Length: 113
Length: 111
Image (cartoon, rainbow over all chains, first blue to last red):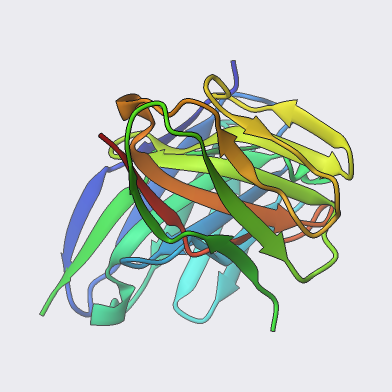
């Protein structure tokens, strides 16, 4: 069945360094790839998303890249700050069916002062 | 303010005692879903609804029921809760092709 694999499961980086989280998906029909950030005690919140007609998207310190041929996409956070510490989830779906979205297993990112 | 509101936020219950977790959204979204979050397993979809009176099973529907009588509400029903349903539950809503909004989560413990 459809599957999204996410790596690493935990990541610790020095404040100011970059963090990269990678995901692969199995369903070639997927064309919408959102990333969610979940802070302690809260629900996941969308931080950035990318659609399959775009290879890269950037929003300030956050960027996402997509390689449709290889079926993988990545989240890049530059100049990390303490408030970036959270659990991050990637996901894949066909954007016309947002009710059926497959999430990765999550990455716990810790920023060391 | 766009919101998905779920209640209760925290609940400890006993095996077999029926319970309902309510979910309400104020964005007039067609799609609503329930997920459970367990360590190392990410978010797994329990049930989803594409509109009023239209519901379908997600990846882990066993032991759960839902209903969608009104567009804004999508309650999750555990008819006979068991300890393996101890989890963190999220309700979510969206309109087609757009951002999914999540509630704040409901911590459920079944003893």
